[in-house]
Amino acid sequence: MCFNKMDGPQVEICGIATLCFNEEGTWFQGSITGEDDSQFAIYGSKSPRRRVGQGHNIPPEYCECSPLDEGPGVPVTFDIRVVDCEIGEEYSLKRVHGRNGELCTFSCSSVSFTTETVYRGQKADLISKHCLGHKMAGNRTNVYQGPIKLSCVATPRNFPWVL
Image 1: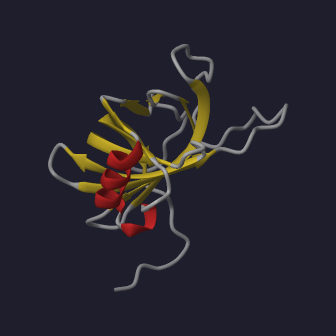
Image 2: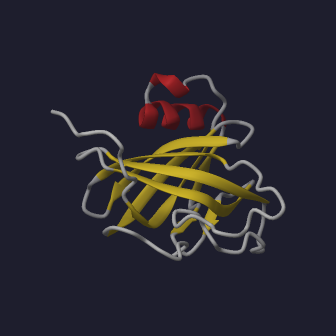
């Protein structure tokens, strides 16, 4: 795990992800279809840069993996949020390390994603529109599809659940 202390029940999500990145690669939205046909929404945004000396007392939802893994592309660090579309449970992973470029990868111990298919141009627009609706139309997205595996704990809520 990327966490030194995981409070609460741990959830493992395995399936196929479709990640739609904006042209600059600073954020993404997408979907995950689980191996059991469960549906999840996934959101990511570049993590703010950590200042020197901030490495101590890392909260449990922060990744502790080394950001210096080698491979093609540019090293990136994202804050990721996953929502279970059926029950509304939300999961959060902070400072997840990966690489972005021709291919996209996340290779922390709590998140594993490897690109199998890349779409750009009109095909990417069609897939992102199909996956996310009209909100991504015309945004010049890059779409990466491939297997994903996440291990995480639910994000605590500070408000009562109401039906």
